[in-house]
Length: 53
Image 1 (cartoon, helix red, strand yellow):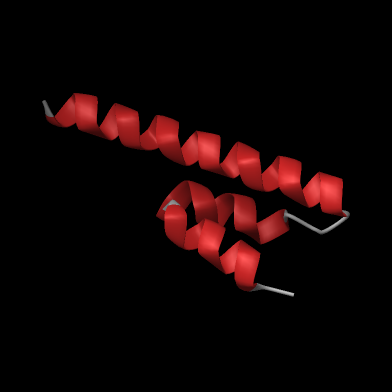
Image 2 (image 1 turned 120 degrees about the vertical axis):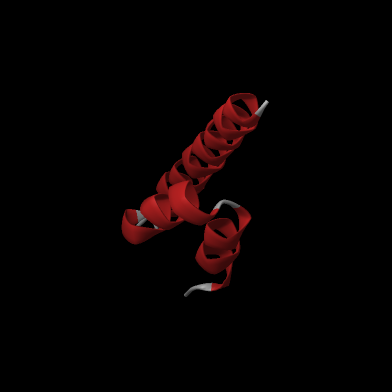
């Protein structure tokens, strides 16, 4: 049960990080640290990316 939860969480965070990367490339913004933060913190990383300059 725990392994399934961790796998789904990792997959979701990976999808979010890919979304941040695609958005950054389309907008001409640097994604750099936001990819790592999104992989680690999920929606918190996405929120930080969107609220940053």
